[in-house]
Image (cartoon, rainbow, N blue to C red):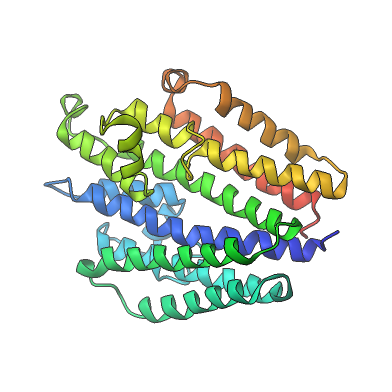
Length: 313
C-alpha cells in the first residue's frame, strides 16, 4: 500500500498543476468578458475574484479593479497561495517530495515549467501581453500532462494523481461557469442579445470548449445548452460529469487494489448519480448558481474525505 505521505504528495502535486492552469483560464474568462463592456469592467473582475475565492484578500491590498492588478494578484503574487506562481512552486515542491514515484519525463516537465513561468512572471505583465502569457501558462501545464499520461504506470500512483487532477478541475469548471452568474447584464433586454451570447462564447473559449461545442450544438449559443455541455456532457474533458466519472474510476481502482471502500466512494457515487440522471432544465429550474455552489461544497468535502481515509496527514 502506498504511504499516505506519498499519496498526499501526488494528490496535491496534480491539484496545484491543474490549479495553475485553471487560474489562467479564469483570468482569460474575465479578460474576454471585460472586452464586451463599453463602460467599467470592474464587475467582470469582481466576478473573477469571487469565483477564485480571493476577493477579500485582493481588496485588502488593492483598490483598482482592472485587468492589471487582478492579473498580477492571480498570476504572480506569491502571497496569494492560489496564484499561478504559488501553485507551480507548490506543485514542484510536492513533486520533489515524491520524486522516486515519478518518471524522469514527468519530473523534468514540472521542473522546466517552473523555471519557464518563474522567468515569465518575474515582472508585472503588460496588459497587451496578457493573452500571450495566459496561453503560455496553459501550454506549460499541457506539456506536464502529456509527459505524465505518456510515461506513468497505471497503478495507485496514477490513481491518486488522477483524483487530485479531477477534483481540482471540477471545482474550477464550476467556478468558471458561475462567473456568468455574477455578471450583471445592463438590463433584462440584453438577455439573448449579441452581448449575452459573446459572454457565453467567452466562457466556452476559456475552457477550450468553443470548437467542440460548435460540433455538438452548431454554434447555437443558448445558456441551457452551454450549461448542459459543461455540467452534464460526459464527453467534454472539463465537464463536471467527465471529472466525476474519472474520480469514480480511480477510487474504484483503489478499492480493487486495497480491498477497502470508504465514505468518499459513497460521496462520488451520489454526485455522479445526480450528474447522470439530472436534466439541465431541472438544474435551471432549481437555480444554476445554487446548484454550482452546492457542487463546489460537496467537491470540497470529497477532497477532505479522500485525505482522511487514505491517511494523507
